[in-house]
Amino acid sequence: MSDPALFAAPPLQAPVIRTGLARILWREPSVRIGSVLVFLVLLAALGAPWVSAWLGHGPTQQFRDVALSETGLPVGPSAAFPLGADDNGRDVLVRTLYGARISLLIAIPSTTLAMVIGTSIGLIAGFFGGITDRVVSQGIDVALSFPFVVTALSLLAFNRGADGQSLINPMLVVIIVISFFSWTYFARLTRGLVLSMRHLPFIEAAAVAGASRRRIVFREILPNVAPSVLVYWAVQLPNNIIAEATLSFLGVGVQAPAASWGNMIADAQRSSMYQVQPWFLLGPSIALFITVVGFNTISSGLRNVLDPQRL
Image 1 (spheres, rainbow, N blue to C red):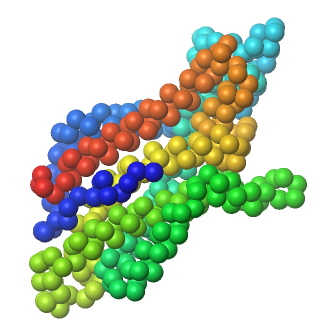
Image 2 (image 1 turned 180 degrees about the vertical axis):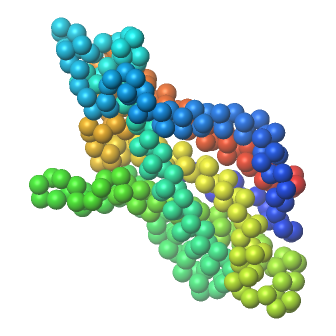
């Protein structure tokens, strides 16, 4: 996980400038490049059903008679299978596109939930200080002390019934698990920003003018904290996509035959068929790489644009 302090912009001493923000963002090269990459990933995810219908291949359908050779090896790229097939005769392109849906449907809600929870807790800790801050800080330190993979494997194991079937939708469980490990970074970032901001002149002026604590938090502090939090959301999102892929790779995330980049990479690694049909591994790997690079590039551009020292 990235250190939130690296993405914390100095607090503003005036209301955040909002006029023409979209135009300013688009002039930033990193934002443009990252947006194009992310748009392509979103387009691929949304267009998965159309590509599936065009090729006549579902994400879990097996075509062993035409997608596997006489020796049982998967075929390579062709007109019928643009990225070839996997060892079960399934279309790699179609499964890669549907894998984008799974990754985004898990990463976006989990990162957003973690942002809301972490930002709320960080605001409370930083604004009230004292024992509240100490208790919250200790809680953050305790949560950060848990190793992600080991704890996630343990929690996901409780989702298995006596018959081995999942008790709750695995996607929902993965979202909760990732959020549980992500909120602490948002909380620590927000707390640090609020601590450095709460004694600034415009905050003290609002208090002297009789503004309530709620108004100070939501009208004065939160708008100035939001840019750094949004930048870190864009940073944390690809980390959570990788976290989902890791859990699926280990066999405790999205379960086969559902298409996930993690379990597709795991299937390729276990069978070693990528040595015969490299796109079996390259398809989901390149898609994962493009997604991570896209969001990381956007976050870098957002950091450049939303740095208060540049406004």
